[in-house]
Image 1 (cartoon, rainbow, N blue to C red):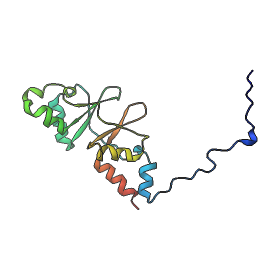
Image 2: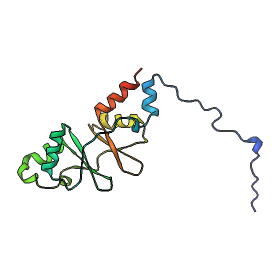
Image 3: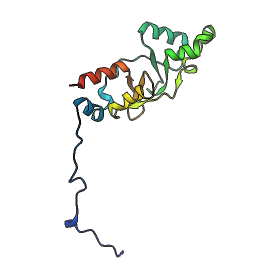
Image 4: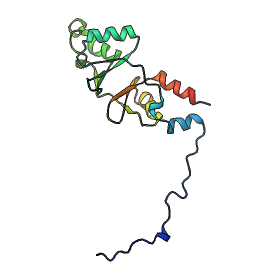
Amino acid sequence: MTDEQSPDPTEFEDPLSDFEPAQYASELERALAEETVAKIQLQPYLHFSPDTSVNEAVRQLHESKVASALVVDDNGNLVGLFTERDVLERVAEGFERNTKQPVSEVMTSEPTVVYESDPAATAIAAIAVEGHRHVPVLDMDGKVLGLASPRRVFDFMVKHDR
């Protein structure tokens, strides 16, 4: 038995009793801080398996008129991101030789990601500050939910700019 006494419940002071909710200058500011990345349109998005050939991946990017695709394994886990920049930097010079290899050999491994529960501003930071044009969005189990892009983030901002 210790000599410590139990706290007197009549002396308890609620630490949140003087909590002031955040004050925002605009609806947009509130949305960026309080709405989650999941509120941004994340679909549709193009995706490939890691063993898709570079030739097929480039063809699908071209036909879909998109600049990037997610590389996702059979369990829905993100393996990487394949972008037009990857094509220019890792494929173009030896195109004939590189087109037969799997996209996993030339993709961007371990891309910056955001999670569905992150504030919407996190997606903007990944795009604007980190300089990524397309950012994969994952659920809390690490499964792919979609892709945040400048256009989709802009649409989210316009919707909340009142």
